[in-house]
Length: 218
Length: 205
Image 1 (tube, rainbow over the protein chains, first blue to last red):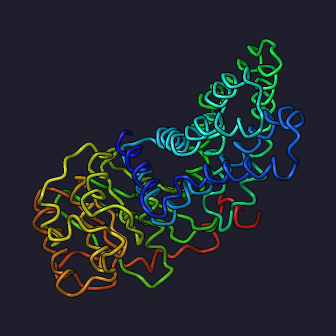
Image 2: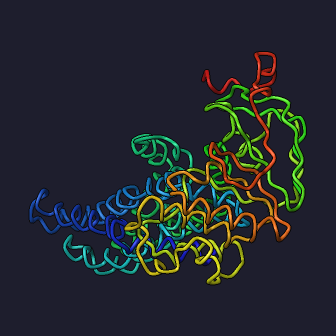
C-alpha cells in the first residue's frame, strides 16, 4: 500500500503529473472574485466562506478524472487488480493520494486567500478546520465517481454530473461552519456533520469504488 | 497448477468461447492459437479473474497467476528501476539485478521509461513478470514489438528461469518462440448462439 501511495505522489510531482492543477485553479478563482464583485469589503466578507468552499470543491473536482484514467489506459489498473493488493485498498490509497496532492494544499492556501476576501479574523480557524475535515470526504467521493466512469472516453462531464450532487452536503456544512465562525457563533454542529460525511464516505465508498472498478475492468 | 474446465467466456455480453478445458502442470506451458477475435485475450482475462466466466471453472491456487496484457502498466514518468521496484513492493518481493539481466535492460536502469523505445518498454513490461515471482504466467502477445534477439531473450527467460523452476505459463501468441511447446487451437471452441444462454444483455443496454 505504501508503494502505491509513494508511486502516485511521485507521479503527481513529476512532469505532467497534475500536481498544483487544483491549487492553481483555486488561486485563480478566489483572486478573480474580488475583481468581479468589486472592492466592497463588507460584501466580500459576507460571501467569502461560500466562495472559498465553492472554489475548493471545484478545484478538487478538476483533477478527479486523473485518479484512475491514467492507470486504466496504460494497463496498471488491470495489473493492480490481479496483484495481492485488494481493490478496496487501492481505492483508499488513490483517494489519499488525491487528497495529499489536492485537498491538503488547499487547506494551507485558503487562509492566505481568505485575506483577499476580507474574511472575518474569527473565521480563519474554522476555515482551516472545516477544509481539513471536509476535503478528505471530497477526495473519497470523487474517487468513487472516477471509478464509475473509468472506462469512458471523455468521461469528465459525466463524472462531474455524478459527483457534484454528492458534494453538495459537504459544501453546505463546510461553508456554514466558516460562516458561523465569522459571525462568532458555535460551529460545532456543522463541523461534526462534515466529519460524519467524511467518515461515512471513507467507511462505505472504498467497497463501492472497488465494485465499480471490477465491473469496468471486465 | 492450473486447470480450466468447460469454460465459457464472454466479451461485451456475448459468449465468444465455449467448453474450453485444459490443464497446465508445473514446468509446462501451453500456447493458445487461433485467428484474431477468437477470444484469446478474453480467455486469458477470464483465467486471471479480471472478468467472470459464464460457465465452467478455473482451478488455480489464489494469487498464483500473473497476467501480462498488451498494455504493460509502465509509467512513463518513472525510471526503469522505479517501475520495477513498485511492482516488487506491491507483490511483496524484492527487486534483484537478475530481473534486469533477463531482459537486457540493466544499462537502462536509471532511464526515464518515457524515453525508451517501444521494444525496450516491452522488455521492461516483461521484466515485471520476473519481479512478481508468480508461478502461473498468463501472457497475451508477449512478443509484440520485440526484435528477434529480444524474442530469444524472452524464450530463454521462460524456459530457464520460469518453467525450469516449476512455473507454468499460458501464452497467446502468433509467432514461434522456438521452445517446442504444446499448442491449443481455440477455433473448435468458438461459441454458438446456444452458448449465449444466461449471458447478460449488457450489450443492449
